[in-house]
Length: 313
Image (cartoon, rainbow, N blue to C red):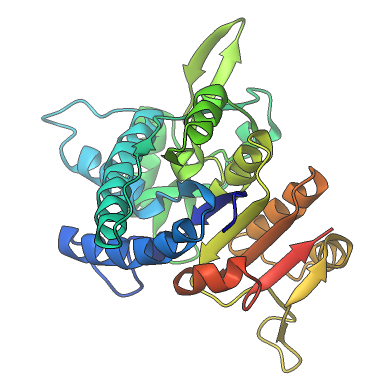
């Protein structure tokens, strides 16, 4: 039995699968299936800290607010992020509790409404790139730019969408509470959706309209709690080089120097595998033992190095 700490970053497929509408029933089924994988790891004795994405859920909230803006005043993005931490945290807590009880394991699980500090001078604020919310026609987009001051750009997938900054995470505001809970044998869910982005303006914390990459925020969290392992669960088997080419291959066991070389060579696209690989590199560089990237439904195999991409010092 291990007593090591593992930080697990859940991808969007833990909640909504490709081709699904994202109904409540679908989400409960998906979360329950995902929590069976997490329970396998807990059963081995690991201390577990979970984090998760929130892209589709924040997108839904933004669409609801836009559709009802004439009846209910819309909320800013930081509040939408906080709402998803409660929504997704609740689903994880309940599903994981039930799965553990089925196995005769009684553990305390808690979700943190978690703020993550970013720099108000981050270059990302000058060049927003992260697409969020619903799709609009060009005419609607230009009207919103005039009325709300939003930055709108054509999405390669069609239509116009709002873009917001994606600044780098600097610190986790609730880190001491998270550490204390972990050390008291709680299973903790934190930094959901990359955390609620906040800036420190002369000693006062304020939320900002931005989206923090969940994997980079997860790495920060893993480093701050001195985790032994950081695993990123997604919908592919691992990190691949020469993706889409005849000589494409999955990386199995690599050193941090090797994968960093591939990263610099541009093998991992910024919108998909890039941030995951960068987060794994940062974790090892910050003193972590092992980072791993692999499929959600092979979580224990990934942690125990039987599948996926394993990155070590």
